[in-house]
Length: 106
Image 1 (cartoon, rainbow, N blue to C red):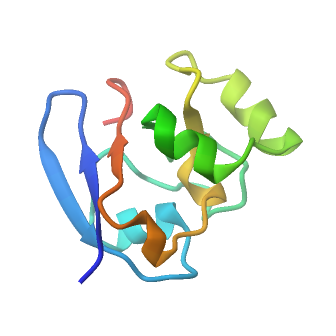
Image 2 (image 1 turned 180 degrees about the vertical axis):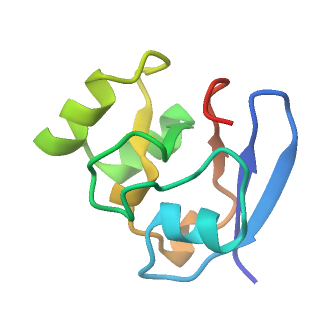
């Protein structure tokens, strides 16, 4: 069973089973991962699914599109490897990926 690990700013670890084709935000909300609210329902209209990826994983996901860039630009905790989880489609190749949650998104 393929899994993604979500790690909170405090270091708490939560694992979620991968369902290919869903967004990373959907996976997180389906598993009640704390810190991923997805208030806009995945429309890229808020920043409540902000995640920070490891550099090796960020390069595999491709660059954020203009609307995602705009939302990320309003996120005070943005890092160079920040993405919105609603914009990342999950695949089984993501097995073992670790996603970090920002401090003030709890």
